[in-house]
Length: 220
Image (cartoon, rainbow, N blue to C red; front, side, top):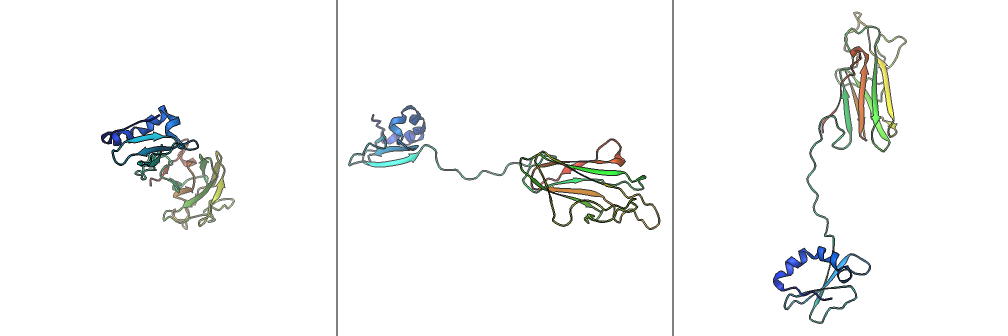
């Protein structure tokens, strides 16, 4: 089969060449690849589409190209997702606050739940923070009886969390109202949860009754 293209239509022919390849795959394709073969006459601009086994004439030049062009340049970064979604890439940082109530009675219990919504093991850090952002992990909870220390990870430590698993971290709020207690020192104000995989974080701080406390994903 021979297809002759005038010089003036050469560019158009190249543009629509991919669709022509579907109609005449035996002529346009090499036997073992998706390379398109053609013979071009530089004198008159005529182009013949041939298969890989057909030689070009002495006054022609063989050209080849792929049906799929080269990869284009990277596109622009997508828009930030809405608040409350794990978007923007790791680390994913959630914050739950407030984490205490002044003059709470009966040492109410605090719980933070971390759900791994990814298909990979997540490395998670739960940090209970005082008003100034200090990590209270391992610090004795004021007026806890029996004495308890704040849970969570210290420093840069993390805990693995399997896919679709939920981690529950619990502690009690301080209730001391004596003269030596200022209501700030060693008191949890916020909880920061960091993960290298998409997670969902919720909390139930019992001083709020039946209404769970607010946990939000920090925007990038």
